[in-house]
Length: 318
Ligand code: FAQ
Image 1: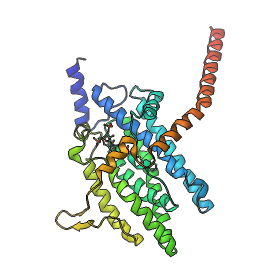
Image 2 (image 1 turned 135 degrees about the vertical axis):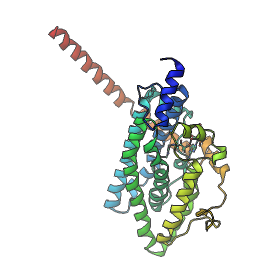
Image 3 (image 1 turned 120 degrees about the vertical axis):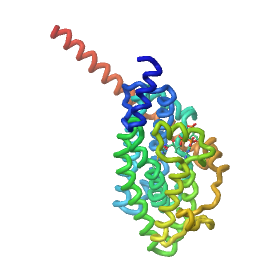
Image 4 (image 1 turned 60 degrees about the vertical axis):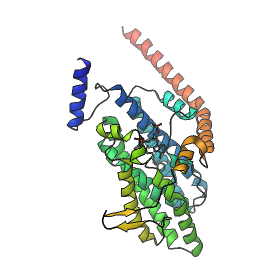
C-alpha cells in the first residue's frame, strides 16, 4: 500500500475506535510517542516500588507487612506488562532500561519524594494510587491494543491499592493524637506532589494535543487533575483531616473545586533530577540491575543450551 493509503487506513481505525495492533501500519511519530509514554510508565511502576519497599521491614503488623509486600509485587508486575507492551513497538527491554539509567527516559516525579513515616504508606495508597487510577482508567481505552489491555488489569489492582491506603489513613485518623498528627503530616507532604503527577498545565503540555488526536490520551492533564481534586476534597472529609491548600473551595458556578497555585518550579526541579530522592532512586535501580546480571546471563545460557539441544534432536529426526 502507498504511504497515503496506509495513513488513511490508520486514521479510519482511530476515527472508528478500532484498536491499532502491533503488526498494523502506524505513523512513526505514533510509534515513538507510545514508546515514550509506555516505557516511562513502566519505569514509574518499577521505580515506584522503592519508596514503599522502604517500609516492608517496618510495617506495624504481620497483616500490614503481607499487604505491603503484595502491593509492591503488584507494581513489579505492572512494570513488566508495560515493558512487554512497549516491546511490541520494536524496542528492546535492554534499550528501555538503558534509557532510564542514562537519564534519557523519565519516570514519574512522585517517586522522588521520601517516605518518612508509616502514614506515608497510607498517603501513597490513597493519593498516589488515586491519582494513578484517575489517569489510567481512560488509558484502558487507549488506541493501541497492547497498552489498553495491560491497563485493564493494572487498574483493577491500583483500585485495591487505593482502598488499602485509605484504610491505613482511616485507622490512623481514629487513633491517638500522635497517630492523627502523623496522618495529617503525611497528607500534607504528599498532596501537592500528587497534584503534580498529572503533568504540566494543558497550555504547557507539548504532547497532549497530538496524543488526544491519536486517542492515546482521552483527557487532558488539567481535566484529570481537576477530577482528582474534586474526589479528594470530598474523601478527606471522611478522614476528618485537611488538604494543605487554603484556596481549596467549592465553586458553585464551575461545579468543581478551585485550588491554589501549583509550584511548577518544584516540579521542574524534580524532573531535572534535583528532587529530594532522584539520585538515591537511580542509584538503587542501577545497583539492582547490576546485581541481577548473573540471572540474565544464566537465563540466556539456559535458552542457548535448550535451542542447541532442540536443533540436535531435530537433526536426529531428519
Ligand atoms: N513526572 O506533554 P506532557 C503509578 C513529562 S504510575 C515526570 O503533558 P504526556 C503507579 C512528560 O513525560 C505513574 N515527567 O506529556 C504506582 C513529558 O516529557 P517527555 C506514572 C512528567 O506524556 C503507584 C513532559 O513532562 N503514570 O503511579 C510528569 O502527554 C504507587 C511534558 O508533559 C503514567 O506514566 C510527571 N508527573 O503526559 C506505582 C501514566 N508529567 O516525555 C507505585 C501514563 C509529565 O516529552 C506506587 N502516562 N511529565 O520528555 C501519561 O498519562 C502521560 O505520559 C502523562 C504526561 C500524563 C504522565
